[in-house]
Image (cartoon, rainbow, N blue to C red; front, side, top):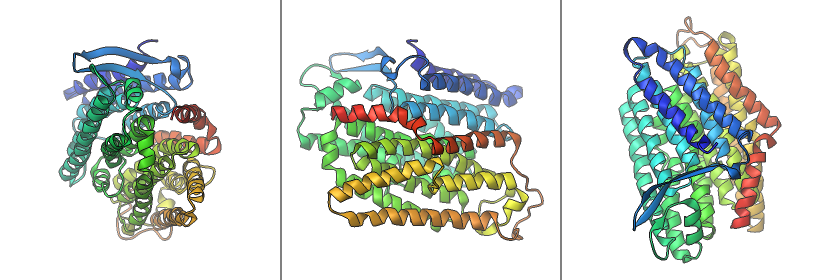
Length: 497
């Protein structure tokens, strides 16, 4: 049991190495290697989710890594109500993208699936790390495979998009690293700096508010670029548009959540006074991201780019919940992270299939696809309706309670007029999704492109989309299936701060 959390990192790591050496005549077997190792990881994370290995607060690993007179860094892993859903979501989406891509034929399969498993290694490390320095190492690990996935397997502008993605996120992470060093050194009065979460949180509590606020700003900047928030969002639409479908699913489904996870884990947990100091700035950034992302969707002609802009808007909703600094706000911000991961995985799978099966993702060239591809159309409608917040699907429980938490906040602050931003966001979101769906699926069949070779969803694609659709509906009907993990964490968080 002592190595159960490490196994979530080691299993995909071994799988990535094995897949990497499956080149040449064994190239076609790489996908099955990836499915096998990612399936084992999903089984372990599922057992963890159902507490087969015991309560979360009983699970943790810590081994001394680097120790000298200057600093102490540990290989420390923990899981709690904030991280468990992200761990499960990561393992689930990796399995589903591997299954989804079985029928795809591309060169160097071994490299492609090794990159997917390498991303899983970094993502698991980020969500399990209990040491600031280990967290940063794993954060950087996720960038490398995603860069190569976009650059090697992306669209026509893949090199530009890959470089832009890397520059934005890496520069932001360097600023975050400065904040990590600062919070470590400020948390000790004498002796070596211990970068474990608990040691830093205990030591930083007595630091002056001005110092905490500066450190908060450094950390927050690194995380908000990753989410991403306006005005540092421009890398995301390019990265999504050029990335292969599998890369887009992992990028939107779990990689963007690294930013919001970091804000809660580092900024709110360790620096609650500084969070209150910057509260209105957080809310302002959230509202601008929500409105700008939704408004930008209306102007898009590429389905995939439209969904990319929608991610900016929906992650802005996560930021808004965090900015409320309330029990309900943070609870449903975490729920929205999980919900958005499920929904965007469906969205990008469907959008990717549009390009592969129809030959274009350009909305003005499409029309009447529901008659020719009814299963595809069904999954697109489920994903669109879930993303716009239809009651009965998981997106509703991500957005509506966040808006309620924001309503309570602005009512207390006597600025009730600010609710108009949320209402505008809901109207814009419904508008761009329904308009895109009407132009893509319904009406007369398009004559602008040749649909003679267009075909409906394949068996493996159907399996992956069906699992996501079931989960989107299941957590939409029974949100407590996820909230039962989040609530104890948030109660503990507010009990401490």
